[in-house]
Image (cartoon, rainbow, N blue to C red; front, side, top):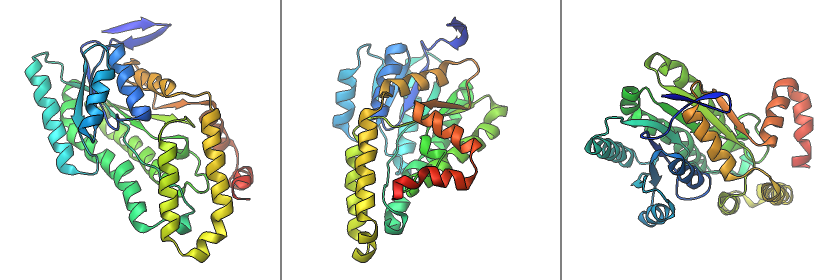
Length: 299
């Protein structure tokens, strides 16, 4: 039943089940714990059993269950969908799966000239193909409940920033995929929303640096040297921006909660002043002016 909260109509979370992918660390972990605390029955998608055990121990209401799922492995996704359906049926609640939060993702950061083909495929397999595979596997359950899909992208899905080209390409693709899913699923009563978080300090920043150094190590040394100083400065500045950001994982988790409980969910929830600023600039500035705005990154 919809309820009134701060003047907005909300749907009560109690008794509703959601799956959150990529819940081991960072934004996914914060999201899974927030939703469990607010009353949802949460299936937290993790790749390692140890991560799932730690997450269950961190939950406080006994409504969180860890589920092994690797979004790049179709068999793993199918098994997870079957497992979730079986658990909910065994519970006898009859509510089924209400929400899917497609959060799992990776970030390849390097000058595009230096990005190995296998890393570009990994970027798209995880952030785009894997997300669609998960949506396809769980849609039969979501159609029955007239539930919701929440796709997590980023502000980089609005403006393609230098040295994040592979990541931006995948996020732009996920944005387009979300638009199409929203339009195709409207007739079935399934709402699709996008969460666009900005710079937030999470463990992903250490992983970005590791992947970046690996990419540079596989590129031609003459090409790498053309970019090295500027790119390494970009990595330092980017991490510094994240460390100084006032946006937190909890801010993102609250946005996901809203997308799942707003009676009339938005198509996009932008989290962070940097994302809102870039969204405005992308709408009002011509390409040449936006290029000038971003030029300091590459100089």
